[in-house]
Length: 353
Ligand SMILES: [Zn+2]
Image (cartoon, rainbow, N blue to C red; front, side):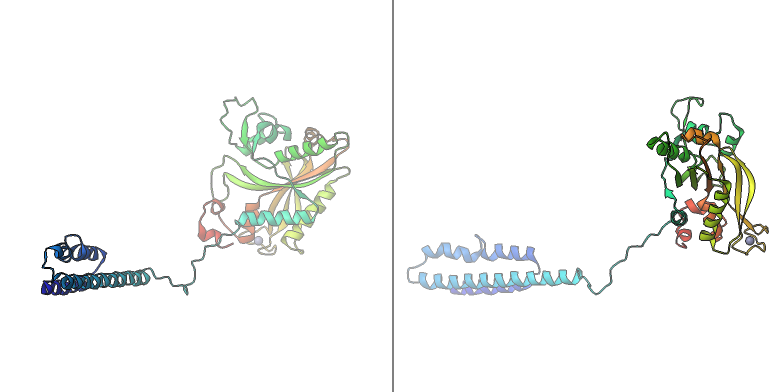
């Protein structure tokens, strides 16, 4: 009996040496310390042994049991340590490695130009007035002196919303220019004091859309920056002085400007302002098409009908308005030769600004 126990202990400890993982350990435990393990059956058999042998065998069986339990605990601990070491090795975190940086975005070139324009006009006392992008035909055309079927509408092929209305019933559209904001601003200012409407000095930036064929020079979506000044005794001289001052502030103190007669339905008289080509300094280059001048904006004195529609009595009030294309100005500034880059979302283009 004693020898059996000794042999059992040796076999068990040798078996434990071979155990590699938790599953093996559990199987070992069942085999050597489980209810049907030979050692445990020894305890069951104690009662059948001769009285003289019982204490000796019982003590020896207990020694073996304690030895096996101790060895089992040691093995379990060493397996746990080994697993921990493995996970520390495989899931190693190198805290000395620098983090992954988030690519940083930047302001779109048109937005940069718009902000520069807003800032320049703000320095000159103009406020920024935000007007809606979705307009009615009435605001986009009729109140700005473009009657239905007026030929000037041909210049602004429009996107209308399919609202089920017929064209004669003031359809809803994407604005083709920022000018409807003139009417909205005048009516809002005039509502403050209809008898004596306050003077206005605002710029209206924002997105417009026209049903254009998309080419390197024209897009179906583009920004405009509109300006409006209304008050008593405002003359064409104020218009010229203000816009020339703007050109010097924006393009450089030495820049020269010139005004050419033009036509817009909502201004009378109307003009276009050119600035001396800042690429060649006026000597003629590809950007200015050898003319030495760059066309920058359209302008004019607010048409009496438009003043009237805005709630300002044209017998007492006058005003001027102007409009320019921030994309076009950005193209001139950075010598960009294709307007389609602005909406193509090509990072190779956008990251240059
Ligand atoms: Zn030039």
